[in-house]
Length: 216
Image (cartoon, rainbow, N blue to C red; front, side, top):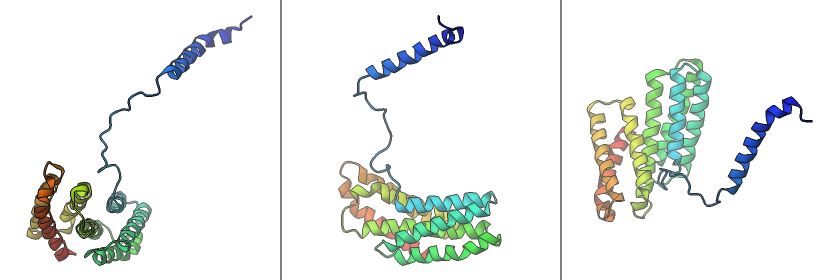
């Protein structure tokens, strides 16, 4: 004899069993859901990773969380120094120097003496160096740039995003214009006949890097 409590569970068990059988009968080769990820955006560059940690530090600082700010700063500085140590190019030393300057501020952040605009500017200088170092390394690699559109764009965006906190008025406006023009040119590398655009792209990127040298 079936007990009443068990009788009440029968419809649920039958439904679950039916669902399990139906799933088992589904073809193995179902098409995958479409994705917007591309080879260029599938993974963050080391510069992006370091910048993300530094952004997390600023976010924590704005909330008054000293412990989280210090933790994120230490992680961001370590990531920036690791990239500098393995880089080749004109901005290796500049990146290491800016990361070192930021590291010196961490005790002050921990005690509450450093924050606000001072911290934001120091972080932005590291991000500027991260972006410039990434672009410099790509230009010095000796190969073409057609396969580096994502990395070049990422480096330029890091530099552009750092400008407001660095300040400088007219200089910042000049830098923003140079970077915007370079971004427009880099996007042409992805189109048909992109190789023909490389000489102009390299010239514009060189101008952006010269600007960064003046800041860093």
